[in-house]
Length: 234
Image (tube, rainbow, N blue to C red; front, side, top):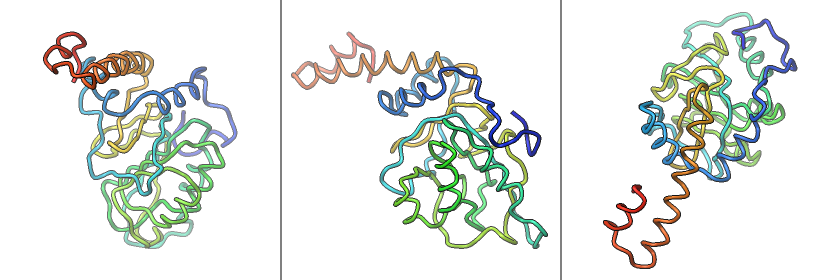
């Protein structure tokens, strides 16, 4: 993957044969807490984004591969303020998640309805914006899942610029690299480094199985002490 220009938006960069299946598997069978626990088990901690990143509407659950976008505040008008932003969104591929780092800016809303519409048309599975968004009702009607730090109606022109994409960004105080696996549900957002995605998802699936068994036995009246000793999960 490349930063800025250098590849056409329709050029296939997805060589991971299990991309979409991994996304669907996580969405259908896992949840962020068990993924976070599995990362802890491997000693890869601090992969859960900060708690201020919340779903902007009720149907926000997704998993996908990070297409990172980097924004910076500006205090002047430029000749072509949307050039890199447009290129970044048009570069999205099926199975990807737009991960927008803004350096925690609250000056503008770099993501809204039209970017959500374009991302959805490209096959993106969602967006995480470490900043503000707008057009939330329209995004909800579209059914595109977005996590953000807040909502504000102002445009980015003269306030912020997309400066690069497919570069490492900080989002929710987690460093996200292009191609990392991003999983979001109501509990928050977790990032799995690309090198250990398969291992983490397999560990998480096994933990879900043990939790299901624990839940059933607890429901039937077993003591938590005994169930924990048997399955080792809480």
